Length: 138
Image (cartoon, rainbow, N blue to C red):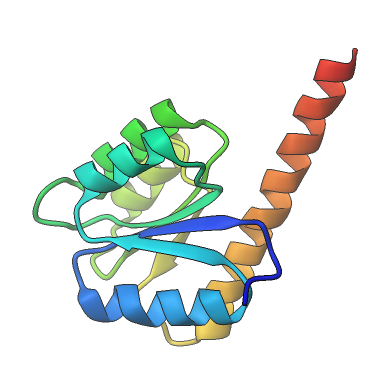
């Protein structure tokens, strides 16, 4: 049962990654939705609030960096964590330049590290929401 009100979207073409991350994050109280199709996941974002997204860079239907840009257009507050087993310095820099919040290397050696990155993204989201609330109160 969820004790958080944080919605997490995981986009990856590997079913094993989707299922293991879903279990891990649901056990930590997050509301988790998974999708193996980036275009469908972006459409999901148009109709639902996504606070944090974990996005694979290398997928057959759409490059993760393209998905990142589109997701940021849908909701600039969504904290996006890119993932890749095929990371290069150029890809990491491109992800950061396009608005990624963080980057995870696959395979995950330590699942608690994944949780800590998600928790840091949650804290950053809460800080941004606070700034927006303050600006609205002025």
